[in-house]
Length: 234
Image (cartoon, rainbow, N blue to C red; front, side, top):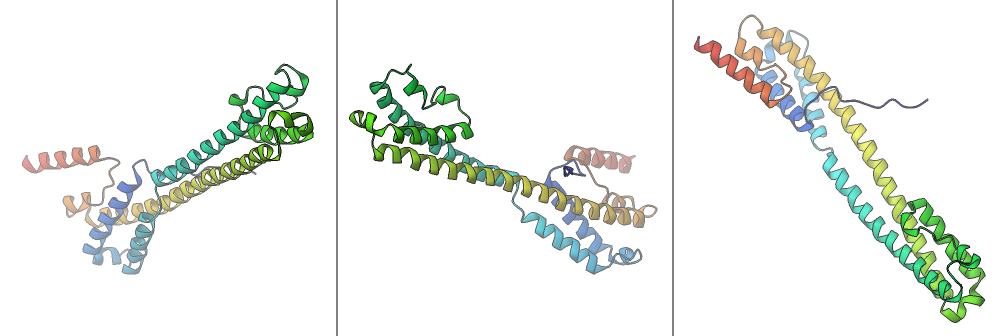
């Protein structure tokens, strides 16, 4: 059964989630006695704080994308080195045989520049194999074990770089999902805390009540502050 994707329950940045959680924890400490009446003890608040600290330490997507870009660049370098090694063989093959001959075509290097990573890897291995089969015929144009080894080494390095890149992509997917899961847990606890805080002050203190209102954006927060100031002036 296919695993269902994980979605954020909140629609603001992770940094804002962290700051909102820390701010509400501060208010909850201030209103400790009120929270205790709802069974929300200091121990739970401490656990919430620990969750926030752990969340703050998780790598963000910029870090993960950066790591992925580094290994992708290395893969591109290995890709070009493999193509260069293949072209070096094929230049010699073209000297010996016409590039329209069956012997040339057997190497399967047509559209080398348009090949996918998988196609290029298979092509490199085929070039080395076919070149070795015809090494006696191609020796006079400089095809030898060293030139073939250059292709096989480039294949191995490219495959290794490709695997590392794919691993980094998978690592990023896992890390992003983990961050979403942890963020959702924080948000759920934030909702609980804020609902208690609002209930404590709903009928006695509007300012403290609004301390526990979750704003989706800074713009929402500015609007609420202006509206509060307007009410206080009237």
